[in-house]
Length: 403
Image (cartoon, rainbow, N blue to C red; front, top):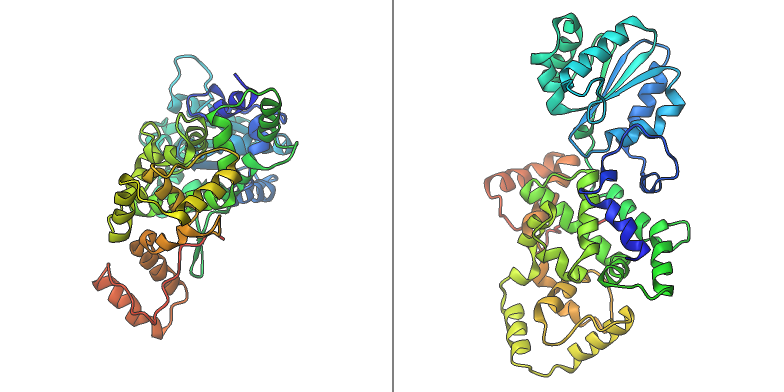
């Protein structure tokens, strides 16, 4: 088993290391992967502003958001001012419930001078309103008020991951700086990147596999951008829940195989995110041009420009990835590189087949609301009445762009 495999396996949701504790080890793989997000900036600002006021700060969200990682990373800087309770890892007795552990932490808070940071899932927070001890009625009321009105009160503050989307709308562009940064950290060609360093060691010792080929493919910017677009699409169309932990498991599934990443992205059935991405498989698109292409490949019709495209692409990958007889793999490759120049650009003949008008219209509507004026009333009115309305040719539909 190669060194890259050992590192990639730690990204799996099944790995014991996927659940963070209050361990402040600065040499771990997840320390390297850590990316400061707006929610962490808000958390740090809150701790700084309240360090001299006795308060309770709830850092709340869903399982896998990264609450424990944020708390652990900043714990040493603030441990003179704050005590900590993280519901996923914190228990005082083996048979103690989450509610009982919270009650004990709140009782300790009442009896000492330090403030308290609580990393907690929203579900457990909701349960505490009903199940928490009445001696902590002020805290229960503050939680209930926040859940109903999104307001802080009585030196009890809430920072909620749900208020900080992983996607950003800027004018007519949609982006995900967080996901893009995560991909870049994993694939960065630098000896400071433990993944790339492991990749080189395996390559030198000739311990390569499908994992290493997939790592090379994921290192290509065009593929990264197309995958991010797919993640945005499934989030918008299918309400796909995306957390830091689920993203890492998604990356693990893409890289580990057993299939080539280009197929793994649309064929895996073990990963929750890919189950929705499969619905966006370009092979499922029915159009005259794509159907004709599939029939021509099945009949082994010669196409010198396709042959040239495949030869140059395979040279770029230093491996024979594409084959003229495998139409599904070729179409998926066309899709992933549709916004980029590659080989002889044969793939751009098919680019119009891959436009998702539903998503473009959605972004257009959001962009219109953000710069709302009297001239936009008609656009918004039409899109409300006709959700599948396609503007006329002289109206620009913003493309889904990763900034």
